[in-house]
Image 1 (cartoon, rainbow, N blue to C red):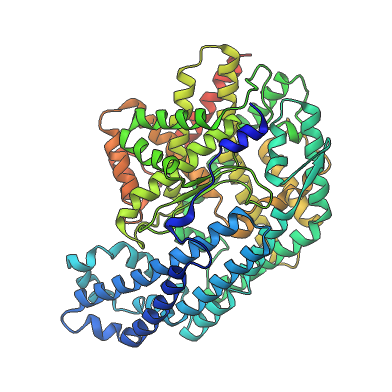
Image 2: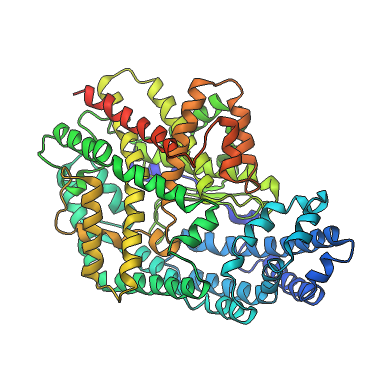
Length: 597
């Protein structure tokens, strides 16, 4: 199959369900109506919530206020989603960059009169609020209200909150845009070919070791030439966070993320400790095995995700990828497969690799009144099929959770990766079950083991890197060399002696978008992978009724925390032994690979 044919069969998303273009009258109308509604909302409720709660009809009146606030928020979420998705599809287009910035400037202005509402909710007396929450009319918002009140100790004065809101446009938000536009604007050249970042990174999965090395060098050259820019971006965003954390009295740089994820710091610490302790039996051991398979004493860093000898080399067509994922989903739950199929049939997926397109992959939930969209950079590798399964898992989760409404559909990150990683596992097990050839089975097992190492070991290494960067930044600005040294230190610890830190690899921290977009987000991937491994073990042991409980977990959205949602499965993430369930599954996979010789 030619490259052109592969490209031509890949779907591009249709965003018309959001808006029909940047000049769509519906977009302007929505923003105008939302602005008027926000002003009217502020006039009706600002400074009056305490009295509202205490007038005898408090529960009903407060529920009506929250519902009105939610309606306005969903309209704004729709407009913001549209601008973000358009920009993600082509970050090199200055018109789309301007459109996105203009939309977010407008959203910022519209939401300014609304800032009081969540601040004032947090001032309501505990006793009166708890009494009102017993009323069913308000009880449906209980989880959302309690989630917001967790931030009460870190709330600033109304005037400062307004200032922080206004500053966000030209603060971290502007640096995030600079990062995105800089990275998406790069091209990399090797062996007579020119590719964007995503395509160049994929070349390091080539079966040709010379090609892997050439593209690794091409990436390093561009990254190294731009290290000063990326160091400035990272220094500035980390310092910006430190300033806000200090004013809000967060005890640690990770504290905001833990609160947002509704997870106890002790639980995250236990997971990180367990994963770091497992580095030798997981990553160190696996990469030593892989080095032997490739006939080397140690892997060059560009060999880490290289295919094994004897692995299938033919590209997987989009049609085959679709069938593989939907079949795996359908064998577990026909209703889950039906939702996933809608993404293909209604063009909710953007799959081709294009210049200027956002790197990586994501599922964007948009708003419950529309539907999610999925972005991929599909190139026909087995890992791309797993990525499709992963992002569709997010999409299914977002569709099901959307039934809870805009506020309560938003799942904490510790649970947000559950459906995606579970979808990957279903697809992997389906593929494994139909392979009889030893070399192909070894290649598939190795690919899955590597994906799990990337999800667990690599992401916890990223988390450790962030912790060190944020701690060091509090002592003063870091040079690009300082950051690179921290990167190599963490990579050596996590990958072990079987992976060389060749010249050039010190610059590879600069393309990791999570460090800029969402500090400390990365541990959620490891949390989700270990959680899914434990869940899947329960499924294998007791498949009867598991599917119904699992879909109920997804449909709950943000209405319940991980503790309550895991109880029906007999799992407890606060128990340090919980993490060994997930890590032992990875170790077992490596055991099987080791026995294959």
